[in-house]
Length: 204
Image 1 (cartoon, rainbow, N blue to C red):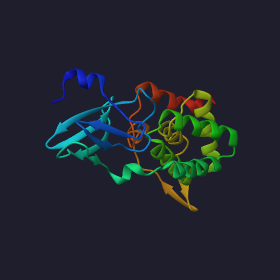
Image 2: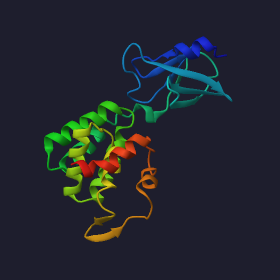
Image 3: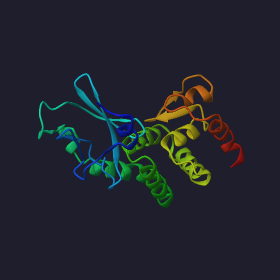
């Protein structure tokens, strides 16, 4: 059984991105280990070992080993996706006119969202494909000047630029609705963030 003290302290993650639990090893996603102090929560549920970050984010779920000394591995955990993330990063940076600015922005994304870098970059590429370079450049400038370093911020600012976007030479009318409702497509910002988005283009 998992005691309350165990839940508070967490279980140590090995440098091999594995967790030792009741005499057996269980794999964790590549990059989980971030130093000697890396800890995770582990709890048994219906014959499975559910492993989460200390903040409660699900990392892995394994069937509990029948005995001791077993090595339970999810092969997907062994993949190093850093190369493909590098490629996505370069694609994002190449779409902006301000190369140094885009370098800073992408670096901040990777620093702030190490586990969600791929998702952040994917949202960025989606925006860059839908909006003109001029609008994307302006949104980038605003993000940098206001210290807004997330793909959601970037997308939300772009939603204030114009209700019409151009895709492959064709004009597409964006869905009706207030800026607030459109912002909820991904992560709902705080009220203060929405106020910032609405005033950015008035003050720049």
